[in-house]
Amino acid sequence: MKAHDDAALGRFWAETLGWSIETEEPGVTNLVPEGLPYPHPSTVFIDIMRVPDPKTVKNRIHVDLATTSDAHQAELVARVEALGATRADVGQGDVPFTVLADPEGNEFCVLEPREGYRDTGPMAAVVVDCADPHTMARFWGEAMDWTLHEETDDHVALRSSEGVGPYLEFLRTPDVKTGWNRVHLDLRPYAGDDHKAEADRLRALGATDLDIGQGDVPWTVLADPEGNEFCLLTPL
Image (cartoon, rainbow, N blue to C red; front, side, top):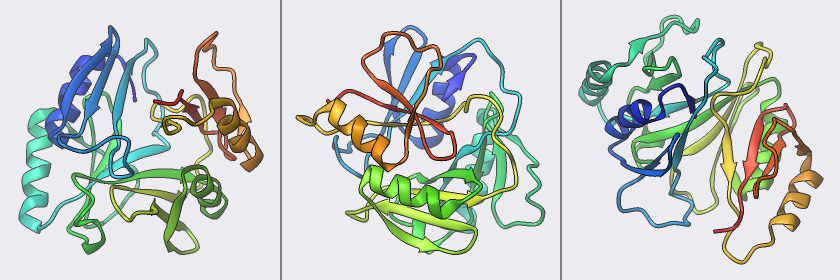
């Protein structure tokens, strides 16, 4: 996530998710789930990076939070609002979930209880708006070795091949991507993997190289088939 104040936004999401905070360097706040192994398909981190530019459009990538009961949903909504979240209208209409924005305006949803998300942990899913969810799911499924969980005309859900952790979901929307995404995905090869070979594999799947002014860095910046930026980090 990009943020004007990475430390403050990090505190919000750490409190929301019940995760711990680690500081990599000034301007970078890392959120880590408590007690989960890494690397492991169940483990997803959030890295918050300080940037000067403000948020101007609806994010194309957002987080959905899981709840286990109606009471839990109401409690979680009240708790995140006390932490600084505000209600958001993204055209959702009358829906059972609650759409909010974090203190820097990033949209997220507190879902009503859903059986499929009971074992995901606090983060139910990372959701990507897109024009073609099927093409996107094929690319990301191959990129991450995640498997198809659910598919309709307008929605595709992937989950790790081990059936653990949050989902990665693709939702058809009419919106057109404008500017850099303030929320993006990072991938990390496993220890011992070859970074260049993995970058070449992603390009063969449909990724393209991208220059966002990153300069000489050890990671590789790429774009998925719909132009969403993502980073291939160096192996751990």
